[in-house]
Length: 361
Image (cartoon, rainbow, N blue to C red; front, side, top):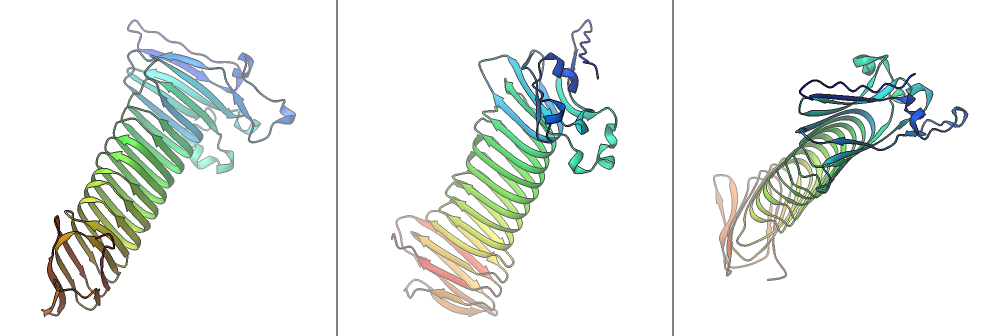
């Protein structure tokens, strides 16, 4: 296969196209001898540089491998590092780098199979491309089948679609929209709105400033010191929210839900979920469950209302909670003294309620 490097320039300088292919080995790609090639061996291409002038968006479409975005405020050019599988089965694949108008496209493609590769190739025939992009942060749209996606100090909006793998994002600001199937996600120290949609995997968010909207089927979810309006809709999971502030809305059908020391308006609900909650005044906390238990540890003053239809309420003996029977429901209500006051409302159908006094009071 010959080397193909295309550079088409119109009068308005609107199109620049370069195709990376396996024959780039002739230009210095590090390639082991054919007899020594293993499926995991990689071609390593020389660093490429591309001016960012006039580019407003980046679009990446890949199949398998690692993709890294590194934001840099010191350089107006993009630096591109590429590796890919060097096994003979993958010689038909290439990475196309093309500028179309104001958009920079990077696409992994097969000349032989074209768009039919999904139907014609088994997963073990998918090539691995490792791509690293370093340069000025621009809005980016990434579509990737399997692998690891990393974003460091990327100060622009991101839209990501990943079928299987990991997403790691550290630092920077800008909104994030992510759709995944079997995906582990780790986000930290990010400013901007976060929207996550997925089926299964482990999700960890730390020190996020901005609204968070997560819809997840099952897995593990953890949020630490996140600030903003937070909405979590999960079917089955082990879920933990530690610290943070703003408004928190959690719907968990089954699993274990832990919320500790989130300052603000907290509302949790579930069918069979096991809730373990810790909060303090002047927060407001509303918790509802069908059959799952709710355990609440409260610190500070509050107006308290606990009610259940068929469940049992367990509370330490005190003078401020008064029990009553009303319309088939057992009710415990009262005013708890404290310098700061909040509001507590807990309701279940058949799940038990445990009201605990904070030991730090």
